[in-house]
Image (cartoon, rainbow, N blue to C red):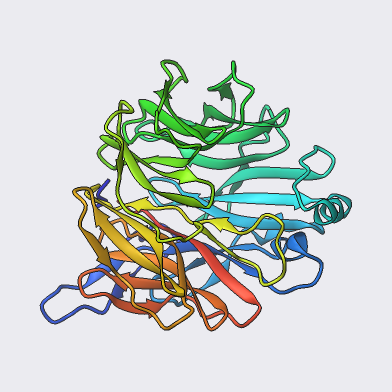
Amino acid sequence: MLYRLVFLAAVLLLTWACPARADEPSVILPLIGYNEHRTNLPGGRQANVSTNRAMVVKADGTARRSICGELVNEAGVWTQFAGWSPDGRTAVVLRGWESVENAVWEEQHKTFRFTPEGWLVDSYLVDLATGKIENVTSVERVSFYNSGLFFWPNDPTKLGFTALIGGASKPFRMDRDGRNKTDLTKNSGCFAYGFSSSPDGSRISYHENYQIYLADADGSNRVHVQTGHQFDFVPSWSPDGRWVLFVSGEHYNCHPHIVRADGTGLKKLADRGGYRGVTEFLDVPDYHGGSSDIPVWSIDGQSVFYTARIGNNVELFRVKLEGTIEQLTISADGTSHYHPKPSPDGKWIVYGSKRNGVRDLYVMRLSDRHEHALTDVSAGHAAMHAYWQPVN
């Protein structure tokens, strides 16, 4: 969806006018929400994950600040920036907690153990102008682990999220106030993830046991996308709703594919050149193996941004739906890029980059590939998972 960019004087989120070329007018860019955490603390995964904090920063890298500090009110708690409302006034923030005992067990056994006694994860709506915080997943609670919250497209009265129930992750829809939670796969005991809605709000997509499914908004008329592959992961709708993008292949050897909205017309867009498709976000051993690095749509829906291996690097690419591929970064040896996200006007892209052992965020102007640093964290810290603020 193309967003009309205006200055949001009514909120505390200040935008900036970025430097432009002589032949190009100034462009107003929104804020960017993201996360910072430690990467090298002893004690394993949880010791570092528990340092994660939701942040916002102006798109020129100034006015960096943490948000929702009041949610970090006990040991083992972290916050994670997870998205925006369509009008850019409300942030989606995840609050997570894990007990010390459970974290120790997981390190010993090198796997997750999700129990109500060991975990509590909820998704909050945060009005950054007023400071109001709503824990919508705790209303008429259905699970101790609730993530993936998003605003339902074309229907401001609904939200979507994913809940862990009985060992299975399931997509839910609920009212804006958190009430009337509806399980969209209530007849399935399989593990569903990567839940999203089409731009008009009439369809949904998700993967269940690493197979892609498309359905109507209420979960009916489900269609299994037939790829012939054992690993299909995290579908997302094109801005015009005509296509669904996901990675497909084998675990750690999967590549950008698209299908039409009815599940037909499967097409492989590009090859990731041996890239495993995950970026390590810790400098200490991580039994989970990193953070998924998935392709994303351009704002006009005519191309896809993705990362792929070139020699010792993981570089950023753009591929058009007809197959033309453009390499956007050419980096020093050992550099890796991850998590690309285009700006609401389609002229910029934010992404993570690990250079000289440090994970920072960068912004590139797509017209000439001019790049500037968004964050400048010190060794042993990381900046990741950026989200552009939508503005209308």
